Amino acid sequence: MKIACFVEAYNFRDSAERRALSKFKSTAESMGHTFEFVFKDDIPKIQDYNALFIRATTDPSSSAYIISRLAEQYGLKVIDDPHSIRACSNKAILHDLFLKNNIPAPKSILFSGDYSKDNLDTIFRTLGTPVIIKTPYTRFSSHVEMANSEKELTKISKRFLPKSKVIVLQEYIRSDFDWRVGMLRNEVLYLCKYCIPEGGWKVKSKINGRNVWGDTIALPRESIDPELKDICIKLSKYVGDGLYGLDVKETGDGFKVIEINDNPSIYDGYEDAVDNDIYEKIISALVS
Image (cartoon, rainbow, N blue to C red):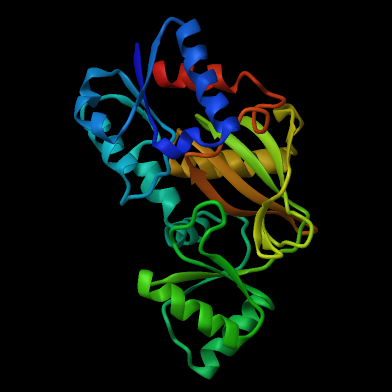
């Protein structure tokens, strides 16, 4: 089988991601397949392959989405498929998906710019203080901010709303880490703790003027809590059967899903530190 791996130049800047990409290539070749990196200029040639594996950032306005749609039209096996990109990229769509299917999640409200006193009072009464503000399209904690007052919520949301007709307001759940559960074909692929850096409130926080990432702690996938496993399987099935990364908070009231992501991070020495067969499993999914 000929596998195309769609990437951008930035995918090779981080040494850990670069090593992971090399592992995908060497694993595929050891299994008897061809694995080639393709870029924007190669999009017209995608029909020459049997499968497409996307590693570049995905959203419906990206080149990755264009090649995903084109590959699907040509009948290639695709990870990430267009439906998964559309569903996971939009936090407003996920908000509705969680409500419709009773997925345990932090309290959330869709906000479109009603700054009346009654509405702002309702927001803080429902969600508490502080409130997390997200644009529908976020990546690596970007466009996710915190408001400790009506004044801050108004200021941040007025900056976000010109880019989107609606934004997501969410209850803040304090924690030392997020569970990251990698899913493939509705089965647990890997299990990690994405730690919150000291002095921050999200996995990638700005501390003393600089961006700081928290540690990644990999754990055996077999050690996953049964309740967490059931939630992740249930949610991934509602989205599709591709490769997903679920971010989940553990609280005194059980697990709360923050979001499900297509195109989850896989860096050498991080997500693969314990279950290092994830490369083989992903290649097998691409050629099945």
